[in-house]
Length: 359
Image (cartoon, rainbow, N blue to C red; front, side, top):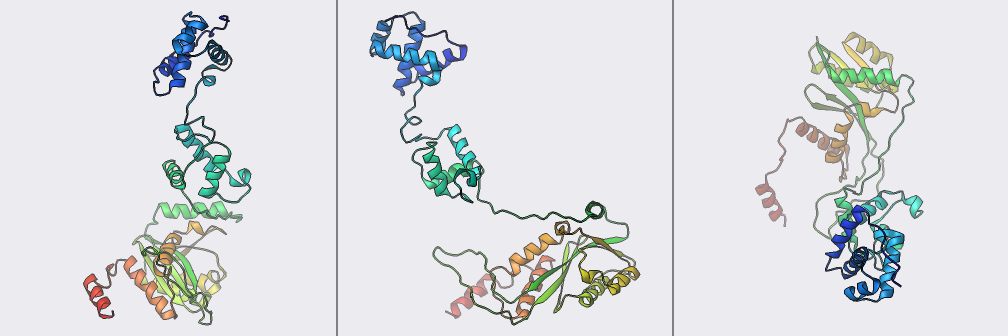
């Protein structure tokens, strides 16, 4: 009956057993560690059972489990080994929760995207966690720097001259040509008369509504834009049509803005109306050099992020009923963007007085 003894301890096992013996809150680990240590001290199983307040049969079972499986076979935590899974989340559990959230849902649950409810259900089905609230799950993911993010698209350029055009534009961005000015040119639009949804600050339960039914009989407008890299200025010019004639007129207006001896280095795409003979002839005779972006590589044009801000602050969450109103809003933003007007249009006291007057 006393032939079962604990095997020789490895150094780290001895240190771990000493720590487990001091776990007075966890009496199970405390007792198991004492059984193994007393067995290594030479005591009989009956004496160990008397010291640990258990039966000799239980002593032999613990020793068999330790000899076969090591420390993991005799370690027990009530919050980790409960039937429904762990009720407290140690570092490794939180790490595993983050790994599940970053794993492809198509392979794990056969759906396109995760939601907090589905992550929680999957964690509970796999017995990674027991009971967990959605808010606590959100907090764990936030601490792991895992946030809800929108996907983005990208285009692969198949232009055979991609790298040559890319290097030419990058060289232009790195170094300003002597006696020259760098301009990024593109078109913004078409600008329709339609409600554009967006987001804004509002009280809980309040939602601004925009019309859902509209027609497009008002036609469209186009804006030719240019970003001056030297003065950090965004220029816009509106036209009813987008063709070689209107673009040539915009090109002439740009040329008049700068002194005659200054060469204009323009980054733009190779749209058909940029390649008309009249445009090419005017550029060749008026000190304008074109730098063509590769096909499907508009991200190389530095005017694009400025158009993104223009769309957000002048068009998002609006419902303009005529092109004049829409154009005025865009031009107002451009004036503020270029430092030509202050941010405020109406002071707060006047606004409060007018709001009170109108009821």
